[in-house]
Length: 382
Image (cartoon, one colour):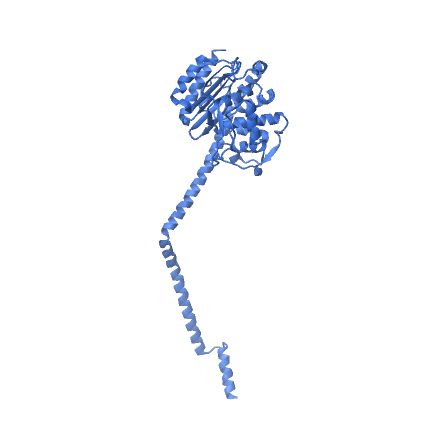
């Protein structure tokens, strides 16, 4: 019995009932645990410091990369915003000129029938070379050889002058003239309703020129897309129209108009496809000439095309050499190339196109000089 009682007492103490020995042992354990915890807390800053020292180069590179990424994003956003603001401002600047063009379209409407039978092909007997102007243009372009192509047409009779006009150049945004041709034809024939809309989520937004990439409205009508394509040279709008109209249909349309050296082979900004879009000065002039004379489609639709071209917002170079300001045109720029072509709707209307692969600065200066000579020649005919 005594042994059992002693055992019970021993078990009781072991189960947690306090005694002096148990307290001492417990306190010792707590003290040990506290010391370990303190050492752990003390070691953490040291470990972090050691890790930072060891990886300081990696940390510096990471921080630098983050800073650069932020700067790039800020730069891209600011560039897009600046481009959009500039395009909108340019649109406001060209509004008075666009009105002049529309007035001239109305003034020349009565004479359209008399000029529709004139073609610009040299195979025809009626059109003749404008020798006086031809000599001046040859003198201006001679230093650049085959890197410059020019085609000028008297819209009243088809008389012309040209330099390397059948040479195909990488078109840049001048190919949008071909897209405009097929768009106007499709609208004219009821194949496309210009009021139909395309939602932004169904578009593949691309970079380069244009407003859609920053504006991002919920949807756009085909008419708006066409205007954006010409007015702001919008690449996204152009690609949507190419998808709708069909690449083959666009090429067939310009071929039917007599364009032998123009071909749409890729969408805009598809620069990694190892193929290019092509156009010649004669082909661009042919399209513009037929817009002016109402033979690319109905006269009403052709007048609409001229209205869109009159609101084009890139007016450096050739446009600066047109004294009347009544200039409906389309530009194109890519790498060292700079092109421009349009219709001057003065009292004596004419078509002028220049394709240049001589750098943008040289091209703008040359095109301005060509435009000045040409404008002076036709002004004296009034």
